[in-house]
Length: 162
Image (cartoon, rainbow, N blue to C red):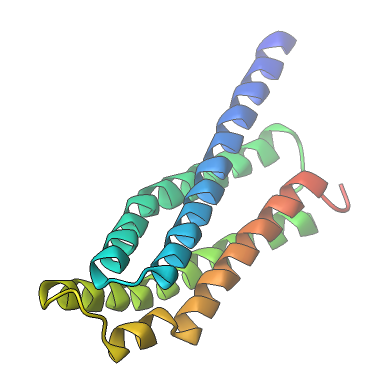
């Protein structure tokens, strides 16, 4: 019986960590692709990088959901208190990361649409495209989302107060 309990906890932890890596990896990939779009010269290149960001979205979504659900299951399974600070802080930061990343991503989608339009009209950049790429609000939202994700990771590793 005890062996099954330990084995179940190991599997839960393995899949929880897999979800966390998908979540973090997808977010990092999106950030790298955004940075490449900023450095690209031609709108066709910018559009390509920003379309590739859309490929990372399912990894971020699935990974974040798996990490959250299995993380909550592990809290129960391992006997932690749902009232612990680090658990509540991680959940709040998870929600913040989702909200900020989603909002920033929707704003940056406008840059992709403008890049696709410019690419179709002779592959010449426009002031509007550069303005959208460098939008301080959209970029701040995306970076803040990334910081929230990293803080969740720190809480999961450190578990302050447990």
